[in-house]
Length: 109
Picture 1 (cartoon, rainbow, N blue to C red):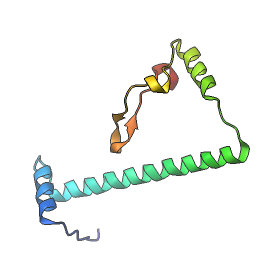
Picture 2 (picture 1 turned 90 degrees about the vertical axis):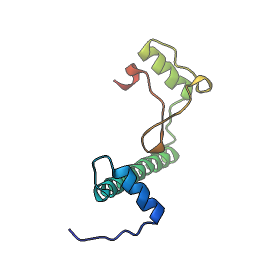
Picture 3 (picture 1 turned 30 degrees about the vertical axis):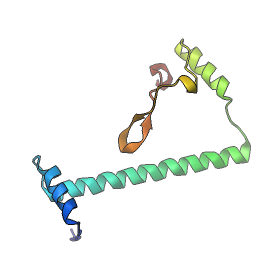
Picture 4 (picture 1 turned 180 degrees about the vertical axis):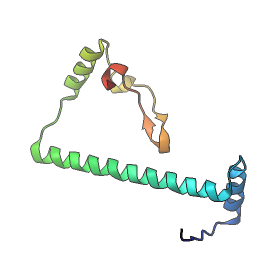
């Protein structure tokens, strides 16, 4: 495997060593951090690509679902009233800084 040199500011180097102190080498810590960031960037790119394709499809065909009909569908499927957006729970941090809003279990099965 070819060697890559990574020059870090001294304060960041110290933080890496401290963070890696829990039984992992600084090298392994940095490799893992880089791998995670690459995975996040790839997933983000795929998400954006799918969103842009969906936007293009809507612009091309004009087919969309009415929001009230979607809520009615969830309510019929779940047997419970789905809260409107103004009553939705606050966003909670998800992986990679994204926000996650849990759907009713019946909506995901």
